[in-house]
Structure formats: structure tokens, C-alpha cells
Length: 310
Image (cartoon, rainbow, N blue to C red):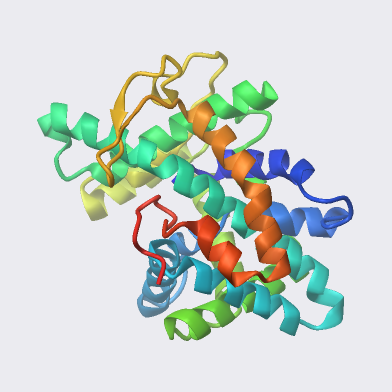
């Protein structure tokens, strides 16, 4: 999956693809951009009982791994059950989550292909696939921030992409709780999502800027616990330049990890592919057209893996 900066910028870009007035006002915009982070914050849940943190992470995995059409329709149904003052914020969040799915399924095979290629040629990376994956994502994050906004993490820190209000947290948590129970038969408190976002934000405050005493201490602590540091791999470096090997701007050949198809797309190509397909998926979602939505999902999960839409 792309990381949080890329998802935020994607959300900013696809906002113009929505009909005028569908997302309006500051709080709805905040909800939409938060929704573009998808279920990713749930992976960062740590400041609670281990069993609760594990439930959050497992739910994030299950949302990403299948039942996409059912999940999106359940999300839409959940919006309809919200108190009327919360409906528009809920719809904005849901439309953002659709954007997260559109970008993930387009870009994730590309990231995985690079991860596998690097681990295949460098034996010392065996067992460190997660860290390699995170390094690729953070590199693309820093590149796209410069490419699209001519900014670095000094001007736009990663944690600043997690803006929210009390209502956006509460509404998003209620929606994901309903999806968890209705689609995955998993009970999770509506308060867990807000806590997960705070944990996600805390992690990035701890690991960035790279090179600070706080970041070094975080890395040391994780290495003592795990032997490696996912935090270091996920941290963003200041990038001022248009070159980025991880983005494949030269369009070198790569192999789709799930289909074996030979591809030459750059990350920029896949970003645009997702941007172009998003309006159709969003329209089917808003209309509640299950048949059309299933057709557009095309059996692909968040990783771009086919045959996973039950």
C-alpha cells in the first residue's frame, strides 16, 4: 500500500473529481481526507490491552483482504443510519475510504513487486520484507510530496496528514465498527478508531524528524524488542528532487505479483490510473448500485489480488 502522505495527496487530487457540493465545508473535507487513510491507522493501535490492539490489526487485515463490495455497501448503509447531523461527515469519510481502496489496489502490486525483487537479489534482507516494503513506501511518499506539492516533510510533516475533529473521529469509528460486525462478525468499540489514529500520529511524532534523539531512542527500543526497526523503515527523509528509483520513472519492466503479467507502469502512471477510476466507483457507491460496484471492484482486494471479493 502507499503510505499516509501519498494517500493524503491522492485525496486532495480526487476531491475535484466529485460532483460540486458532495463534500463541502471544512469538517467534511477533514473527514474525506481522513477517510483516504483507509483502515491503515488500525495497524498502528498499541496503547491499549494487547488483545484490543490485536483485534484492531486483524480487522484492518480483513478489510483489506476481501469482501470489498460487501464492506463498501455496509459502509454506505452505516452512513444512512447515522444521526442526521452526522450524515454528511459520514458520507465524506466513506467517500475518502473508497479513494484509499482505489489507490491501494492500483499501487500495491507495484510496491510488492519491488519488495520481492530487492529481497531476491539481497540475501541479507530475508525475513525483513515488512521493512523493505516500508522503505519503498516512505521513499515514494517523500518523492510525491515534492513532485506534487514542491514541499518536504519539513514544511508538511507526515503526522499533519491526520487532521480530524471530535466528530470525524466519532463518526468514522461508528462506521468502521458497523462494518466490522456486519461483514466480519468482529466486535470492536466505536472508540477504537479514534485511539488508533492518535497512536498513528504519535508514532510519526516519535520517528520524525529523522536524526533526532527521540527518533534514535524509538529505533533502539524497537530493535531491542524485534531485532529490526519498522519505525526507521517507515520514517521519511527530506527530499528535494524529481528523481526517485522507487517510483520507476524510467518505466522498467516489473512483474505483477498476483497475475504474473509483465508491466512497465511507473508509480505516477498507477496514481493516475487510480484517479481516473475513482469517480465511477464513487458514483456506484453513492447510488448504492451493488451490481455496478461489484463489477468495478472486479474481484480485487486492497492489495490488487484477484478473486477475493466474496
